[in-house]
Each structure stands twice: as structure tokens, then as C-alpha cells.
Image 1 (cartoon, rainbow, N blue to C red):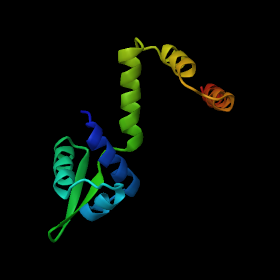
Image 2: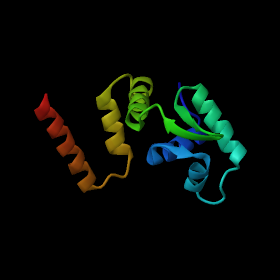
Image 3: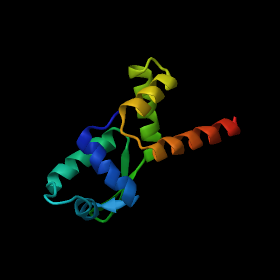
Length: 121
């Protein structure tokens, strides 16, 4: 299951806050803030999709993520590699390094990460 762009934006705030009441989520947005009803609708959809849950405190709900940010994005990157790069990590890496404006330092940092992973295997 996937989140819409607006759901993903709200989820980013929830991941950062870890748990939050409606007022906390609204305060996390920059102006102009979305309407309370909009955020409530997004939360309902995200609960139905299994991404968010809540605890009741009287009439107030404290929302928290059920899916870790790392797991969500890992699934999407793997899907991207599978669907757009013929399930080839090297095609993805080639595209990523050639078609983005990475500096020499960033490319060297990537090399260090890859070398580190190679040593582990």
C-alpha cells in the first residue's frame, strides 16, 4: 500500500514527532496550515491503510506511526529499482550518479559507503 503525496507529507511530520495530537500535527505545518478537517481526513485514510494508529485520552487522540520511515522508503526504492531499472541496482546506480548533480565529495562519500558494505560481505 502506498501513501498519496499529502499523506506522505503528514507522515513525515508524524515520523519526526513520533507521536502527536492533532494540534501538534497542525503546528508542524508551515503557513498556510491545512484545515483541521483535511488533516483528520488524511489521518483516517492513513489509519485505514495501516500506516497510523492512535490512543484515546478522553476525546483526544494521540497518533503514532505503525510503519517505520526506513521501511517505507526502502520498499519504494526497491520498487523503483525493480520497475524502472529492470531490477538492476547497477543500472539504478549508473543513472543516479550520472543524472544528478552530485559533487565530487558526495561521490567519494558514496564510494566509501559501498566499500564499507563490501567489507561486511
